[in-house]
Length: 232
Image (cartoon, rainbow, N blue to C red; front, side, top):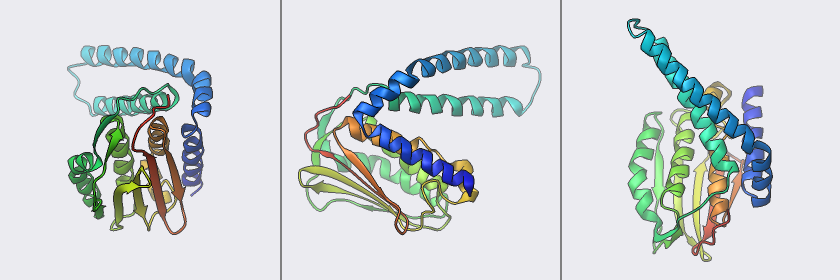
């Protein structure tokens, strides 16, 4: 329970930082050099793992697979941390938001189904054309939804809706059965405290905002203007 609460607090605190361009600049000043040093250390570790595996190629051991997995998990952690704290350049295009939802939706529904969960997609009833970065936005949504599929309780549903409202895109995620941000304490090993801040960072770069409501579950609202004025 304590671990899950700490992860919830960390995620929410980082969301506040990632949503504010001034705080992001301060975070980069604090962590930029550290992240660079960690990246160099990871590169050295990768070379060491490669040389060790090559010299022990005659030894069949599941240890190599476990080491590779742990390396990639740490590498992904610093990839996300750097994406949050570095200046973010967008390439916004004008398109229908439904295009990326349809492209990714099937894999999201499948990921939820693997946990005996359902995901209801609620498309808009009218046009949803506007500007967004067609690479960064889908990737951060994918990170967020795959994380939610992992940490939620088995059998519990979720809903994803999107539309245009007051000259802004609006994305809503509703998970009525959610146990905090990180899921149940038993699922804390699946928590990803950087998934929410990464989404907040990408939205902030679009000039948008993200709000969270934990009353009776997890409810997220993400908005950004139809005409993007990127904020680094």
